[in-house]
Image (cartoon, rainbow, N blue to C red):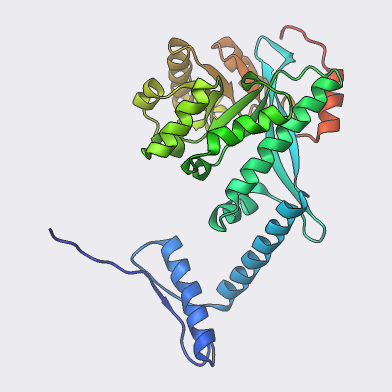
Length: 317
């Protein structure tokens, strides 16, 4: 066999990038990681900006670890409504939010990758699942009709043999059933051929959980996976929804997704619906569930309760 090796190189030079061996090695290591993230098999010179970003990331990681320990993160919930009756709730999606005492609101696009890189993502996933179940049980106790809550699961958690049981345990703690929680997975989970991942998926399916495939159509979607895995819902990515009124290609692809889902008995949730034009098109083409700012942005639990009280189920006209 022939093997062609490549390398990603980080370079720090004396004396501008450091005047001790330890400093030069640390800075060269930072430059190497930058080279690997920018483009593999390349080289990167150290810069002061790179050091600043590395220090900020380290601070963010420490703060996130503390926030998880203190359970000071919070969940907001975005309504998902029925196309045939936009005042009727299909469910809510639980979305993690972090309000840092000094930095203010830290966006998920910033702290979720840090959690993944730092090995905190499974702990974050378990917290999110437990908190979403606790809130749904509290809503039920207070008499609020929330049919189910959708929870995003990390692909890395599926590498843990006990993950399916951990999910089941969370529901049992709060007196919920499998039908009360919709588990959202990404295409990376769907394509993961590890036996432990497939075992977790099968265990969840046998326990009665429904799986939702998030951002369908934006990655390496394969119809063979839809045939093989127990997927009950497809989430149409907002990139398609945003272009519905301006792009014939987006409309054609969306019609195809709706047709496939209907044939397989799957529900489609259109994400990112922001205009009545998008709503009308989706409704006319049989999309059963919609989610987006047109119906409600992600809200804290008390505002979801107010949203529920303000809704009067009615057919869209």
